[in-house]
Image (cartoon, rainbow, N blue to C red; front, side, top):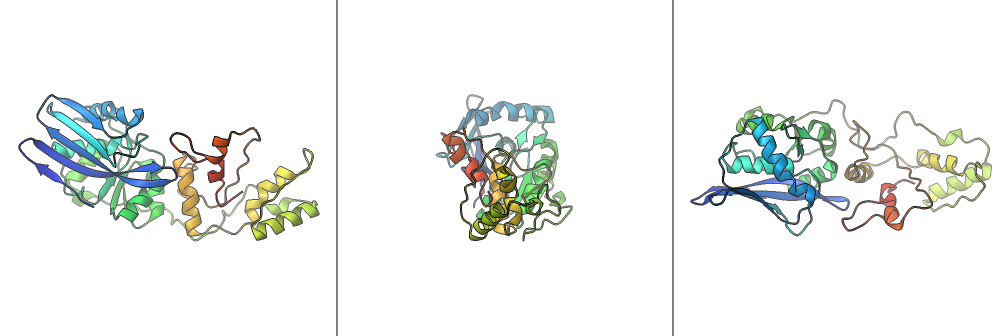
Length: 315
């Protein structure tokens, strides 16, 4: 890891950390900002999607509406590694921080081991994004010590552990914290997140509710115990879906690694339940028989998880 805040004859350069998602894994992104003399403009380079390129207008408008008045200069933004396509709106916040630090409007003292993830509203508010769980996991592995997140994403960040999570509501609040690092304090979860397993205390369904169906029950129990595949054949209404839906309730409780693996995929897809950082029970997916191959297996020009990935460690 490195951090550069260098002033020279041509201008000033700053580098901050953020995160991205590739497939079902997160990775660390370096957002580099260079402010120099020349024809005024805002230039973004790298392998960027339209959503990322539109960050220029969101960032400039958010900074203006938050009260930052910056002189007209040539601003160049690079998102590294440049060979990986960047998607989504999570880069708004790190771009804004890098630009403000390059202009020396905010202090760069706390940027060395910090990362920033979030979408910016035009009024400077910081909004939540998808995939925070995967990004924070990658940041922890890279040795980043602190991550600034929107309030709605804090629970996901806290679930990882070993990295300080700081909640910020808007760009002005973030600038104040960075200029006065002694005021930075990490969030503490309201309730301890139990990672070592345990299904929820109350389930919507349970395998014990199946009445009769002795052969079906026995075949299901054997298949689950041996982790085998199972095929149900029968007329509509005979109990196939009813039993299948209850299989996760007789599977072993999730381990810490399994919880993180499953929750990371659901975070990337934006499917984590509101207010819940980790999934505590095994998933159950029932795709329609007309589902396309790509929707089932995932993939595409810019790979996304499919139904098989969403059913990982479950049914």
